[in-house]
Every structure is written in C-alpha cells, then in structure tokens.
Image (cartoon, rainbow over all chains, first blue to last red):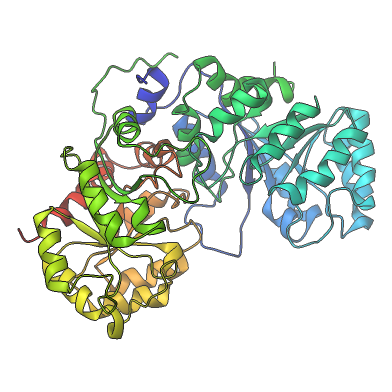
Length: 262
Length: 258
C-alpha cells in the first residue's frame, strides 16, 4: 500500500493543519500509580497543539480517583483558563451518592453536557442504581457520557443503559482493547453508542477492523493523556489503512457532530 | 490538508529491534505473519531494517525455529536474524561451542530468550556459560518484559556489564523502576513499542538517557505506526529522533565483534 499525505505527514512529524482534530478522551490532574514526566496541564496543551489537536475533552483524575466535586471544580477552572481548547467532562462517583444531585445541578449551572464515568476504586457496575439520577438527567438533555471500559465486564451493564436510555450519547473508551467483537456488536446494535480509540496496546489492524465493522462515522479519536502520549495515539489513526475520509471522521468530524461544535 | 509533504523530505529511517515473523500461537485475526507481508509493511512504515525473531522458536521449538528463520530470511539483507537460546544442559540444545559457531556462520546479530514460557532460569547456574559467550561477542540479548522482571534484569546487567540487554515491550508504567536502574546500568535498553509515555523523549534527553531508548514496533501484534509517531512527533531535535529511530540500535550492532 502506497503512503499518502496523512502517512507522510506522520512520518515527518508535521503538525496537522487544515484538518479537524479533536481529542475526545483525556485527563488533567495527578496520578499515584506511576510516574508521568509531563502531567501539568500546560504540557498537555502544548503536546496537543504540536500535533494539531484543536479541542481537548478532559476529566479530572482527582475526580475519578477521590473527590469528584473538587476535581470537577478543577476542570471548570481549566476550561476558564483555556476556553479555546479545553472542554470539561464532569464526574460522579456512585460510592458518594449524596453528591450526585449537586453535581448534576453544577453541570446545569455551568452548561456542561458531557460526563465521564470510571469505576476505578469502586466495584459499582455501570447499571447500579446509584448512577440512575445521572442517566435520567442525561437522557433528558441528550448528554454525552464517556465510559471507561475494559471489555465485557463493562460492556454488559452499558448495554442495559444503552437500551433503556436511548437519548444518552454513549462513548466507549478504549474500544477494542479486549473483547473486540463485543464493542462492534454494541456499536452496531445501538444508534446511541460510539467507539473511542485510545489504547496503549496498539493492536495491529484494530482501527481498520472497527471501521469495516461499524463505519468510521461511529468512531472518535482520543489520547488518554497524560497516561499515554498523543504522539503515539495519533499514529494509530494516521497510518491506518483506511480512506482519508474515514481518518477525517475519526480525527474530528464525528466529535464535531457529537459535541455539537458545528 | 494544507501541509503538502513530498516523498523523502527528511523522513527518518527506522531500524526495528522488536519484530517477530511466522505463525504464532497467540495471533489475532488479521495480523500478518509472512516475509512478504513484513517487507510490504516495512516499506509502508519506512522501516529500513529489522531484528527478526521466528515465532516457532518461541511457541514450538527454539532450535528448529532458529534454523527455519535462516531459510526464511537469508535472502533479505534488511532482515537481521535473532536466535532464541535455551540452557545448554538438555540434549535439545547444541553445546555452546557448536551453537555459537552455527550462529556466526548464519550471521546472527542478536539472541533472545523466553525463560518463563520455556521454563528455565537465566541465572548463572543455568545460562551463565551462554551469556558469557554472548557478552564476548558483543551481540545484544533481547528479553520480552513479559518474560522477566526488574530484579532479574538488574542481576543480569550487573553480572554481564558488557552485554547489551534490550528489554522489549516495557509498558508505560515502569519509570519508577527504570530510572534507578539506568543510574547504575549503561547496558540496559528498552524499546518504544509500549513505552507510550507522554513527553518521554524530551524527558530522557534532559536526563541524558536517550541512548537507552530504541525504536521497536512489537510487530505484528502492534501496528508500527504508533511507535513511529511517538518518535516523529516528539518535542525534540531531528538528531534525537534519528538516534531513537535508528542510530542507537545501529551503534549496538556496530559494536559486534566480526
């Protein structure tokens, strides 16, 4: 297969210009389990700009790990500091049910219509009753929820949510990391389910198989910064053996539509 | 796209230290396995040379696989053969003298080992004789991270300070182990295939550790594209990119005693 402009741009390490590039999955704040040399928000933004990413949708690791309310305040501060590039996901934690109503109100006050759910540190499956106030709110507001996923463990309960709450736009993080066929099946079964690409295992042919199986219009690019380098994640899309239009859909066109940016 | 790129405009050449050829027991559907596919992909990704291990050496029989590898790739100068070792204490493995004579005859440039998968120890009482010979030849030892641990790597680096040990497919969570090890071992290297750490290349540059990072794709489990852009989009100079893409590994290979 001959290389075209996207692949040669990637080989030369040149900023993607004239293309819509949106990162649908990243984070701010710190992490305890391993050392990350450049986790500060200004580094994340500089990295994004060097590649040509124009928008970052991010959640707070403090919110995911410990304190949703303080972490959510952090993403709002970051949004106000970098309004042209950083858009927040808000987080609720099912093991702090007493906070959930106020976080939903916080989202309404701040006009934030996207949420991130992650079961890190708690054993609440995504169809646990404590999530339902959020799901009902999101269903009424056509909100986006980015779910952390790792295969069937997460996809089974998400299937119940996709079926019951058809107006929630569900984005599956790390699509295809394991149990690849299950991601394909759920995306094909539910109009409101979309796939997000970030994955530290750069499986050979995964992007191509997802495009062939579900269509590029259902796939969104994400980096998972600061856990992973956007330098690495962008190569999985730019070098994928798919059409330029498919690459454009994944890199940013689909996110423009999903996040109502047009 | 507004940016117009023309072929051969300062595109870095890549030398892949982590590549496996042949049919694998754990192959995912669609992953290539043949020499033809490998060569086509190398062309697509601008990978000029690769150290190549043969999958049956890992999954079936080390010695059988080693010799099959030669028949598969001897016609291709850009595919450099890697032989798999097992301890020389069971009749399956030739005596070290014969093994190394054969390896010289066939132009083997590196060795690898799968001690967990193939049930043996890399300790001196088991592999000392082999490892001393490999060290003497200045050929590198490739070790998949899944087949070892940092304590064993520390011991190997200490006992064989002139043996270049390239640990394959180290994940992005290992810097708390690696940074102290790199303070004491100049012969320890890792590859880029799973080392997807944000701004890792400028960080290594600042800490004078660039020589320890080699381009490796983990082909065909992983797409080389991810490792390539980890290098090409790094916030660093073209010279540093070339070091990681090719020169660091080439320096190790150039050191081999002919």
